[in-house]
Length: 255
Image 1 (cartoon, one colour):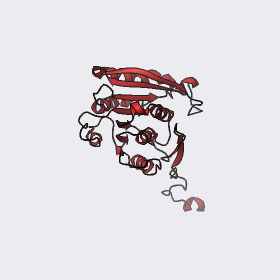
Image 2: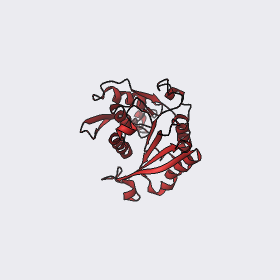
Image 3: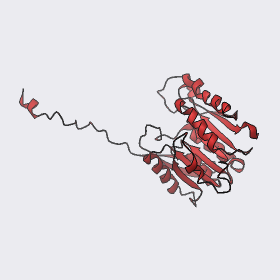
């Protein structure tokens, strides 16, 4: 054995064995009013919280343009929020109470709180709260943030943006919607998504079959082709990968 071999420590990891953590990045969103929101995104996350998705931007514009009917003085719950853009828009446009949630990972929830606290356009933070929540779990800690007069009935508006690619979680998402959406005729869940894997579009859409079985009426309300795809190198139909679809869920027996 050579002197070089003798000097090697077999139990010493190579210098580049531990990759450095990716730093947080920032993204901006221009409100319809022309004002600018700056959002921090986590450096990297296996739950995709490090991206500002097209459906999140698009549903934010959709909500802002209809704020008088969809947001003002209404209670809002967002699931799988990432950076929390749609929830911040709701808080800015007069929602009575907003609960913005993502997977109960400390980094994700801390980042939501960071974006709330650093949002200079929010003159008061009293009407928005960040909560870690696992889809399908009991919703008591979400409902606890509602005004006492409506807590037992649920939220007026639910927001789901680019969550349907999680096919294994569809049943849990429907369960959470069932447990948290108010039974009032005006209550609705907005589900916006892009089929980033076009060959799995049928599996994305299977979510709505589950929703119908759970007692919801499902209506397609929106479609927009974005200027570019989010992931240039991905395979599959480019037009589908650029398109955001929007659906509305309402309790069938409340319509």
